[in-house]
Length: 357
Image (cartoon, rainbow, N blue to C red; front, side, top):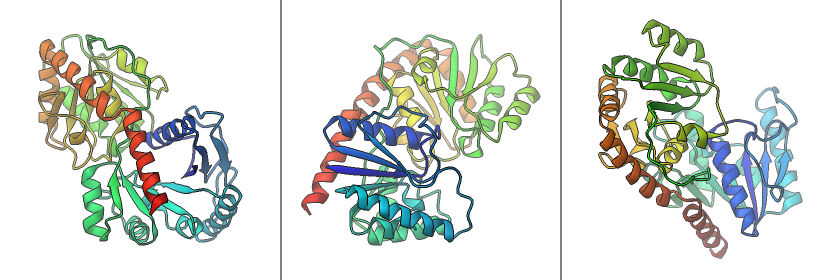
């Protein structure tokens, strides 16, 4: 099939970009003709795109024109791009920001891929986009089962199903996580809750020789650094830049901690667990509970409860046998559930279903 993914930009370092490229690369290996259309910029993708995947750029550089002229310009360029490709199926990445893309995608079969959490991300323009997608789209794919049910109830549609994000890294041979390092990865923003994590780490009474490493960048860098200094944690907490060698970071760690205030389906948590990292996480409304099996592959604690997070971290630090048990269970369970082969099978089944309908 001729497949086209439409994404805002390819040079970002987030999970959305990483998983979109992974899916596109995997489908191209199965003899599909795959294209990725980037709406903004023409910079080199942060993650590797196979040569077989064709890249198209709608707007060179930043587009600072005033709404609605910006979206009208993109609409016509997108329509022209689709006409040159003549796709069998279009996959629009991010159903919550699809308003101007909907008319451009007609008359092609179109899947709208929800990469946000529609329960928590529910601003008026996002909800309008989702209503239009539910009415005019051929199908909606969500990242979690909870979000799929939310779409059915809020937007009165049955044209929705959940396909989880796949593991996007090559998994090395399993080894027990013996390093005394807790790790967290993500943008330095309020959503990721690293301020809560630092406060929780300050409450961990017996750190022994353990350290906490937070990999990322963002607008809260100064805030996080000031909290590290405020709680006198400079010897045990380190902020490091983002890395595209996530395997190396995980292999040097003994525990993954997720402190997000909300999530969709956190890819980084999937991949940490698949590599055998036991995890401690807030039980956000969507996401972590579909990855972590409480008391089997890690520990889930009430959202934004700093004391509970600190207690769970302490439990894992003090109990080597528990960490190893969680580790082995996580590598087996998550490695199978979120394997690329399993996820690609679900995408191909959906493509075939839509082309036959």
